[in-house]
Image (cartoon, helix red, strand yellow):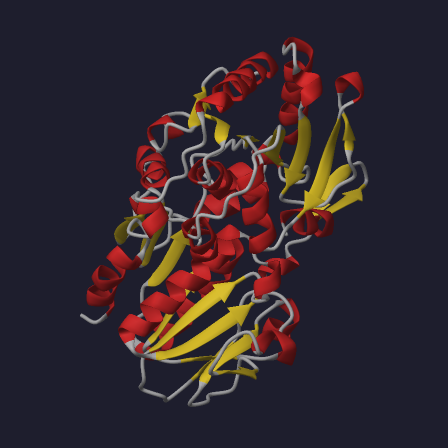
Length: 403
C-alpha cells in the first residue's frame, strides 16, 4: 500500500517534488438521529485475502471490542468494496456511507466516496483509526460531532508502528506526527516495546492501552497438530523489497556475507516469503527464490520445513515474522532497535545489535550451527496460546467508552 501511495503522491514539477495530498480528502458528514451506539473501523483494505498481519490484527481487535460492547458495527474501507468481499463477513451488508441500516455494514470510504457522499454520523459513533491516513481523515469527523452534538467521542487509535519512520524527514513525517497530537485520542499500542518508544518521544494521549502480539490462530492450529516435517537446509527470509523498514538491501548483502564466510554455505538454499519479486542472484551461484505472499497453510508448511529464519525490522515494533519463525522452532536472526531486543522472547532468536553485513552474516552462521541441537516448537507460551492478545484490554476500553 505504501508503495502505491508514494507513486501517487510524487510528481516532478520544475525540478522539485510536488506532492498530491488528495488521499487525505476530508470527510463530509451528515447528522444521524439514531441513538444506538455504533463502533466503526476505518481500515485501508477489507479484503481478507489481501490483508497483512497488521490489518488482520485491526479487524480482530474491532470484532472483539464490538462483541463486548454489543453495539452496531460498521467497517469503512479506503479501498473498493464489492459483494464478493462482503461475503467474507457473516451478517454484514454492503451500503454507502450515507445509509443507516439495522444490520452491520461495510462501506467504501475512499477519496471519491468522501467527495460525493456525506458520512452518516451518530452522537454515539465511536471510531477506530488503523493507519495515519485514517486518523487524519477521522479528525474531521470528530470536529463534526463536537459542532453537531456538543461533544466528540474519543477516537481509538490502533498504533502498530512509528509511522513517521515510513518516510524520510518530510511533509509526511510531520503530518503523521500531527495525528499523535490531537485531543480525545485513546491510543492502543501493538506491543509494550512500541508503547515505551512513544512514551520516550513524549506523546500525550487521553488514555493508553497496550497488548502483546500473539500467534495467528490458523498458525497455532497447525502448530498444535504436531505435524512431522523433515527440516531442510533452507534459510527463510522475510523479503519485502518495496518496504524500507524491512531492510531488503541489507538482507541481501548479509546473505552474501554468509555465503562467503561459511565453509558449507553451498549446502544451503535460500527462500523468501512476504512479497513477490524476481529471484535475486547471490554469490557463488546461489539464488534467493521468492515464493511471494503465501496462504497461511502454505506459510505454516514453509515454517515447518525451513531450519533458519532471517527477518529484519528497522522499527520499534517487534514485527510478526521473527516471532512466528521462532514459534515454529526455526533458529531466527533479527535485529535490535534502540531498546527493542527480542532475545528474551525465545531461545530460538538470535538478536543482533551489530546490524551490518558482517554482523548479520555472522549471526546466520551461528543459527546454522545451532540447528543440529534440534528444533523446539513453542507451544505453551502466552504468545502461542493467545493469552498475550488484546482480549485482556477490551474490558478496560469498554468501561472507558460506557462511562
